Image (cartoon, rainbow, N blue to C red):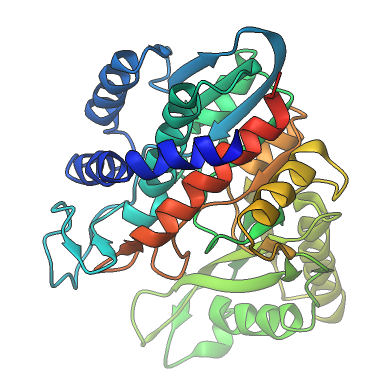
Length: 383
């Protein structure tokens, strides 16, 4: 039966490539995903899937088996980041050159959507009996830095649930059991302005921030065997009006990527500790801090059913299956931490190409992903 499923996938390869190309041709920058959602709604409805767009703009397509059973969810986001500068090709062409398809969103994350839909289509066409449901879930606004706006979070808040899930982020076909969390802290040093000719009459907020940064560098990010080391990155700094004026204010935004076991409040507490120490050392030092964004790492057990199923899929295809993680943050956070849904992160494409000019995905990876998705679903739902 598995070989029959793979035969149907082979027959549907060109349709899968056209579906991906058609999706790339539809711009879907965060907040503007409606056209793509409607396109996929029509497409999945024609395939016979029970398809709807919820009140948030998320697309959900349900494929039902012959009897009741478990639900396995696929999750890949509709939105992309803006095109940006530096492209040498039309970012919305869906152009194929050799094994590459170019375009914004090709690797992040439209390739996974195409391979998931065609995997479900091929499973149905193969006649393989299965019980339960496949839930194809394609949310809006994954790329925004605001948890309350994220489509997956909203869908879970509305009651969506599943027994297990596969998040289709671009992992280079690596089976990722964990992702890092991402948070941001804004630190503001508070000085006193003065003329640059008489700096002793003021308190230099930029110099205060330099002292804070020296202490921040001493913090050691966490480590996890799947994701590796987390990171602490000062990313934005603003202070001062002109060189002849002592700055009375300086702002710094720091990102922290956390590994499983770490939280945003833990890092925020470390930042507050630095501020308190510097205040104790120097009565002129003054600063405040705010946790402006907070999302969490995800992790799933190696013994989870979805992990075992994806390992069997790789084995059937003669592929090795090392278990690893990704340093990026993605919707696996919300699926595992909000929805309590065991989630593996697995998809075609490379995170190194995401958000970059001339983004592309390897079509051979799209094919492999579809094979793994289909065989994993069959392993979980076979009747």
